[in-house]
Picture 1 (cartoon, rainbow, N blue to C red):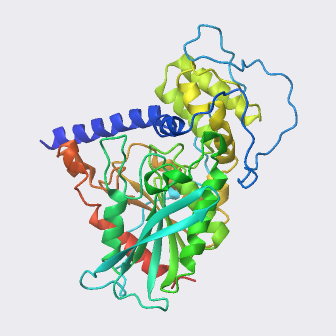
Picture 2 (cartoon, helix red, strand yellow):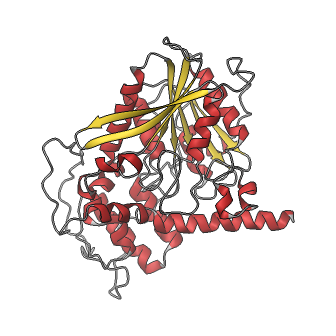
Picture 3 (cartoon, rainbow, N blue to C red):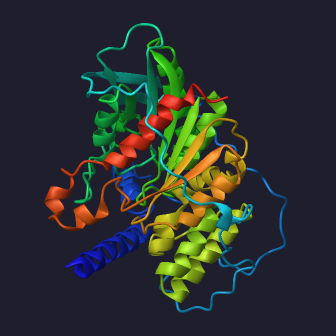
Length: 425
């Protein structure tokens, strides 16, 4: 029976990885395209004057490359080998020396019995519409810095503030369950809908105007708004990267926002250590037929050089990942190196990876830890990609998995860390 369960977990994760690899940038962004589809993909429309303009580094003109600029994944034409094939996981320091640490001791500030909490709806007003979120506040919170605050960073265009998706049957409710569990520990927790989902959907304009810098600005706006609430003693950010995000960018967004707003602590779950185009080039050779992978790699190489190829909507997965209306977002995301960004921080950091989360290698979590001396790595035994016990998830029907709570050991670790943040030098 034990062998059967292990096989079932591996199969479930393998299916999840394959689906995630194919869906990254496809399912969420197709949903966006249906909401606001440009009439032509040959040129981007002019931006409104009140929109944030992404800063894309302009490189000097390179000699003409042998790459085609109108590629089809199913084409039989010969595709030239790219100038630079996908690179290995970046190694910053000796990753073998990065090992999982014992869980933190129980904080004396944690309540002996669960606290009650209330829910407050919050709004953040932007030039394109309002964003909405929920903050859970323990009932004992006073008006003067009485409770710590955790902000769960959401960059997903599929999952709402609770971890529920209208597109996928494996919605797990993980963000909601985590927020409620930590609120019972006396910690205020904020979670929100991004521009593309839930109550914030009206703030999404179109793919042409969507960029990663705006995502970071939204997070910084939320931090400023919540920092004005005098009930909160410290602010910790949690970047929870889902395999269904465009590029697992929640962790990166959390790192950058933590630096810009000088928060007190940072938590990363299943983070990515590569730039986005490097990540997608490597993924292509893992999950696609060789010819398709080479086309993806060639287009990504063009974007790395600052060249924006005009792709046909018949280009299949290449179009889904890097079509003209998405290239602004791709370039604004790709300019950030997660390893370089985390190295800037001077705050306590914990980086987590579930031992049964096969959607990404733990080498990326370790690479980030190796880049910052204040970061600590924790391997969460039996935790899958949804912050839950993957063995337990594999034993129930799909319809029942959303009812499973997040792992108690995860709640213990996060509560102890959040309470310790204000005490660390």
